[in-house]
Every structure is written in C-alpha cells, then in structure tokens.
Length: 237
Image (tube, rainbow, N blue to C red; front, side, top):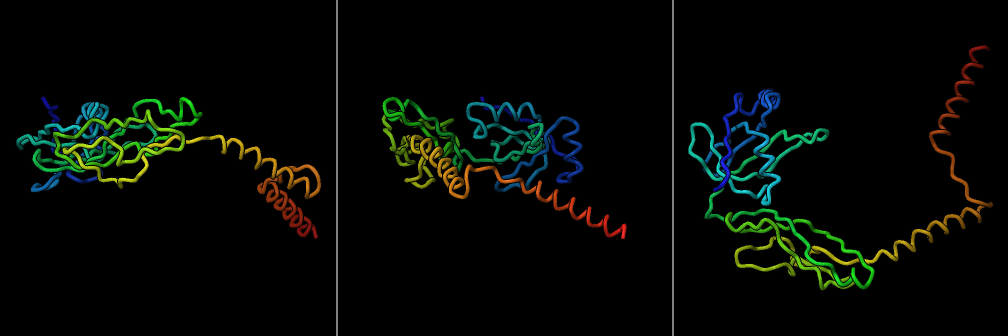
C-alpha cells in the first residue's frame, strides 16, 4: 500500500512569519499544487518526509496525501530545501499527479561491474552523469537504472544511448551524453612534476634558486607602516 502523508492546512497561508512558526513547532511548511487545483499551503511531519526521501525510490516515491477537508490524492515530492548548517528540512513542494499521465523525473544511474580498463589497464572509472532524466508513467518509474560497465576498456565511454532501453521509459538526455568512462591519470601524474621543474628552472634562470614571492599582504603592511611613520614625522614638524 502507498504511504499516506497527512498534510494540515497552514494558517497564514504563504506568510513567511507563519512558516517560521511552523518550523518552531517542529513541522515543515510546504505547498501542494497541481493541475486543476489552487496551491495549498500545508504543514507536514518532517520524519515522514525524511523517510520518503531516504527510501529506495527517494523523491520519486508516489504516495497519498490527505489534506484536512479534501479527499486523498496521489502526489510526489518535486522540490525541497534544507538549512545549510544543520541540514534540516525547512520547506517541501508536493505535486498532485495522475497515474495515467506521463511524468518527467530524474533517476539515479547505478554502475554495475568492474571495467576491463580498470582491471588490466590501470585506468580509473569516472562517473560523469549520476542521474538521467526520463519520461514515463508514474507506475513505471524505476528506483534506479543499472548500467553495465564491465566491458569498458581504457578511454572507452558509456553514453546515454548505451543504457538499458525499454518501451516504458524514454530518455530525455542527449543520446551521446557521457554517463561514465575509463580514464588514465598517468599523464596528470607526470605533468605535475614537469610543471614544478619548469618553474624551478625559470627561477634559476632569473638569478639562482627560486624563492617564494613575499605575500602581497605583507607588502601592504610595510607600506602602511611607512606611511604612518611619515605622518608622525610631519606632525612633529
């Protein structure tokens, strides 16, 4: 059975002070909106919302939302905000959905297997795209998409067009967009010492061993002291 989220109409509606009072009471202010309905300011249980966000389906979870005085409706979380320092939920947006209409959602990409380029060629697997955008019916939203990378050799690329295809979902990202590839860091490791050596050689050519430049802050400090000394001298005159 789908989870039932109880949403209480919020007093003060979209007033910021009312939202602060809701947070002070340990609840989350939010908005429920959707086609054919006026947006409704609501307050919700933070534990219940967190449980949905951290579930297997995450923000793509379809659930029933009940607002006092209204019949239950299908909904999903489309946006949320957290307080940066304490990482607490401070606002949530819920959208009414129809089970017979296509939705656009983002789904996590899960890489499966160890690439040949990592096993035998000393490469590193780099996941460029962690989510893909798809279009499908609400009931067909996958919790994630498995991408097999076992056959990827060094410098080979897995693209959106290489992901598992299905009649139920449509990928909205560019087909040639890179999802993951196997890269080598040997060039980067070699380049770093070479750059350092070039800097040292340039310093030696300029007149001996390279020495770190004096920080600009220190220079400004000295200039300030000199100006202060000059002003004191003028004052004595």
